[in-house]
Length: 284
Image 1 (cartoon, rainbow, N blue to C red):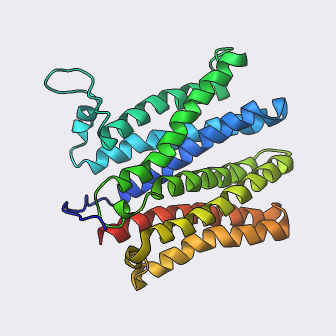
Image 2 (cartoon, rainbow, N blue to C red):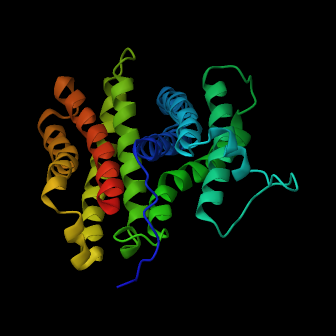
């Protein structure tokens, strides 16, 4: 078992929401890219919806990060060396890499957002546009999973005792993003077909998340007891309810009507609860 010598980082709600919204933004962008690449024009409305969802969720993340610093005006130091005024990219530092990925992905998310609004003309048309969104999706998926990797390399008890957190956060982000898109798709006329596509995708991501959750606890071994203290059991119940109950609802209701809304809401709440319990339980 690794030895731990550093104090907990003291991360609280700003970081919880950053992890959640960053995952949602990256997951939504990746889904938008997949929808754009497959199914031809039939998936275009859903792809637009995904890009319209990604950027607003992402734009909140830098605000949360700067607020968490305590001295928000110093955020630019993560990107620029204040002594030499050169770019401050430290490839060996997960924090530095994360800040730069957030910045670069923001460019892709913004351009795709404007394109979805019809404000970029033919800029992202044809093969050029598909290539652009594929590269953006790589950064989006990196952002969605990197938050878990950041915890794993932090040398903190529990977080650094498993290699699964990056995969868990990535799969959870895709599930959360799919659920969010399913909710928003209901606001569109004739959205029944779109909902069914998203429900099928979310079933896949939920099952995958359950598998990764099991692997996560197995990888922790005896340290898993830290997460299963009585004060955290209610949150874990919410996480489980955000996976198992939506699966049951989808199987029974076929992704239609009010039960489908409840299922999507439970996925979103469960995804948030997962990040809450992972961040706070390890620091307690």
